[in-house]
Amino acid sequence: MKIGFIGVGKMAQAIIVGLSNKSEIMISGRDFTKTQAMADKLGVEAVKTNTELAKLADVIILSIKPQILPDILAEIKAELSPEKTLVSIASGIKLEELTALTAQNQSIVRAMPNVNAAIQRSTSAIVRNDKVSDEIYLYVKSLFEQVGSVFEISEKDFMTFGALAGSSPAYIYIFIDAMARAGVLHGISKEIATQIVAETVLGSAENVIKSGMHPQALADSVASPSGTTIAGIIALENHGFNAAIISAIDETIKKEKSF
Ligand SMILES: NC(=O)c1ccc[n+]([C@@H]2O[C@H](COP(=O)([O-])OP(=O)(O)OC[C@H]3O[C@@H](n4cnc5c(N)ncnc54)[C@H](OP(=O)(O)O)[C@@H]3O)[C@@H](O)[C@H]2O)c1
Image (cartoon, rainbow, N blue to C red; front, side, top):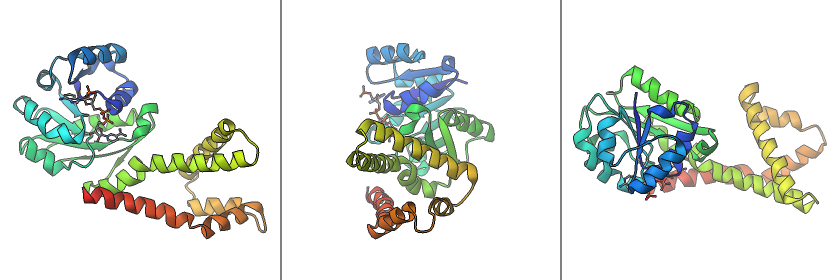
């Protein structure tokens, strides 16, 4: 199976780095000199044009910005066929719109990785149209599994997923930084405090996944009567912590809907 990436920016590079079989990957870009240099760096094959790539690849991963996706599809349309699968990682472009830009019988997968693909820890969502066979779907899913976890969700939930997994790393980074600053206030260097908090966030997230316990039950298990943790939990509540988080996700979704 030949996989072709059209556009090799941040996200495509992150995915390619995590894929095990580089020999089956080819890339194309806006400027061939740049594409060749990138191909040498990533250990993949450079192809001169997007059209040539579409001709050669079985799975075509559209990793360009959403604004130029219609132009790229118009450029490669003649090379598409039901035997090839298009995978779009472009934010906000629905399967229905992708179908309208190609042909009614085009096999299309929509995926949404996140910024943590750069360390092979993406939380990705994936959905297909009814032209994608089970075999191809499992193959495409396995590509995203090589760079993190994959959630098979309904397309109507992609916007919510975008807020919970695409934008939320920014909110989590801000949370980590705020807690580290409190550590600095109490005498630990910013660097060490950031490491301590980041490790604690990592361990706590793993505990939610591995223990299967409700996050609130895990929080209660740390909070002993008249103790330090319950004092902190009450302070969080008094300062509207839960409301702020829910509002951040809600505003993210509202903004996405307004585009
Ligand atoms: N970054 C994220 O966290 C994230 C998360 C989820 C989904 N996505 C989606 O992933 C896609 C790519 O995002 P990105 O962050 O990787 O963007 P990016 O770093 O800007 O990469 C886009 C790439 O497309 C190339 N390109 C521009 N015009 C082209 C053309 N005519 N033909 C071929 N390639 C062309 C650019 O090349 P030049 O640099 O030479 O212009 C660049 O390498 C977007 O649709 C975005 O919505 C991104």
